[in-house]
Image (tube, rainbow, N blue to C red; front, side, top):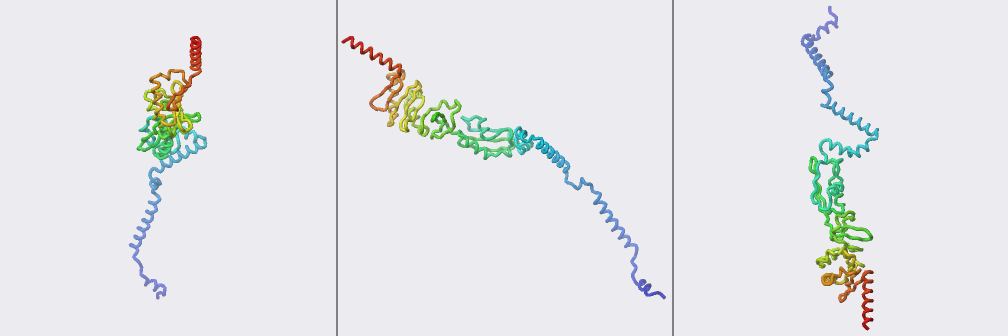
Length: 311
């Protein structure tokens, strides 16, 4: 007789060996293939393209930068080639290759470039046009400025200059002024030497009065060198021959016309005179030079002797 264990075992279903073994083998092969394919992918295919080139460039840049810093060449590079961001922008083609300037009359192109802070060491992307505009408008001769950046490498500058009107001398210094008396700049070269000259405190804000007097002098205006404002009330004219002409506080234009008539009739500018006083409307007072005074004294003596002899 069979034992109880054998009977129980005989009742259990026995699976068919063929299909189950095949499934097990296929599953094993799939798993083994998956593991092999994951391991077999080359490292170069896993990393981003050209990462080796960028790593090499980064390492090279880092090495060069470290060498430059350690070698103390940073300041030398900046002095010769500008800031690093400007250098990089120029390397990729964004340097400032051309600057066009419109509206200049008294200023030179070099003066404009210096005032705007433009030089070969800067680049267009990092050029601050607004800051350059403020720098230009801070220059005494520039009233307005406009700046445009035109890529890839051009800067366009448009200026409106202040118009020089006259020269003003005060406390031993000479300034160029506008028509309203505003000081444009200190006179440090000869390009404004042709402008009319006013002298004294507050003469700058009354320069228009002097120009009006010159216009009433007619041909005589060419012989007037300067005008001095006396006590803020009246003008003294200085002529080219060194003669002083004292004008009245009231109606100085009429006095200038009298002066022109005296020159036309008597050639008084050719006399030995130091000054002509026209402050009184009914008389003209003249002051002789030392030579003129000596000559006048001798003439008076001669006349006196002649009269004595005749007596």
